[in-house]
Amino acid sequence: MSNEKAPLLQVENLKMYFPAQSTLFGKPRSYVKAVDGISFSIDEGKTFGLVGESGCGKTTAGKCILRIYRPTEGRILYRGTDIARMTDRELKAFRREIQLIFQDPYGSLDPRQSIGDIVREAIAADGKHRQKGEMQDRVHELLTLVDLDPVMADRYPHELSGGQRQRLGIARALACDPKLIVCDEPVSALDVSIQAQIINLFEELQEKLGLTYLFIAHDLAVVRHISDVTAVMYLGHIVETMASGELYRNPLHPYTKALMSAVPITDYDVEKQRSRIVLEGEVPSPIHAPSGCSFHPRCPYATDICRSEMPKLSDTGSGHFVACHHCGEV
Image (cartoon, rainbow, N blue to C red; front, side, top):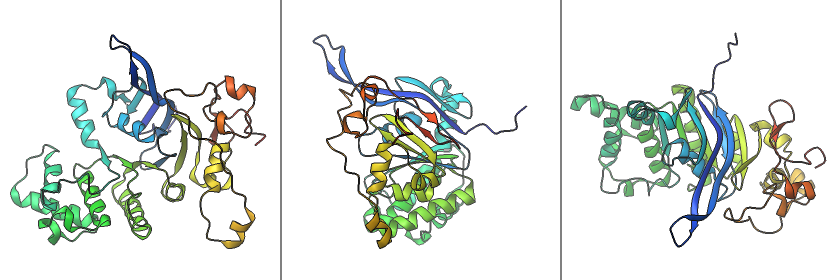
């Protein structure tokens, strides 16, 4: 019998299609294939990075995991239970154990509520009865946990800086003692210096509380720093999955190589020697996605098989998976 621990979260062949055009009778004529058959798993206590440019479907995948959207097809297993088949009681417990941190720290906060009220409301969602003093202690504990001074509990969101607002969003997400947190581009709206502080905070909280993260981002440098495993998405598909160290050392898919070539490097000599890969054309519409490999209209290595047949993710060794017909030749 294997002693290997099962993943905390498993996503199997997840698809999320949205009706785009309808007939005169209201039936969908075409669909936006936001997520088109992705699979991955996240081990407990680890960080899984989901990276790609805007419109690739990474945020939609996160919303399916949160049960904000009901997937068109596929399964999402949390601790071995399909969230689509959870009873109301199981779903209520599930919603406490999985939380979301938003991209916009200001737009996700109620400007009419004080900081203390925002956190207090989230604490009350766990259903436990607390005395007023216990509630106040918990609010102060959470604020301290994210490096906010408890005396700020009487202030309002507009009185905080961007970094402080995001710390407040993190405190709110921690209120119900979650096991999995979906981080939807949580640092993209912040200054670079503040980004580093928030990333360090995520890592400290993970070590202290044993948290598991699904970290959605478009910044490859951020994903590499925080993630254990990284998946690259393009037009609703995962095209490459690897340990995050491999992302810099050995990208194999042409799209990943192009993304990596655009990441700034501070070492002048290394930057001077490398060549920039410039992709031609625009990202195709997900309503009229290309046949075969979704990347073939922009790929300099595309051949007839790329235009007719969708490549499958294949293991190139050490858990490095690539969906490319020509990955050995690129």
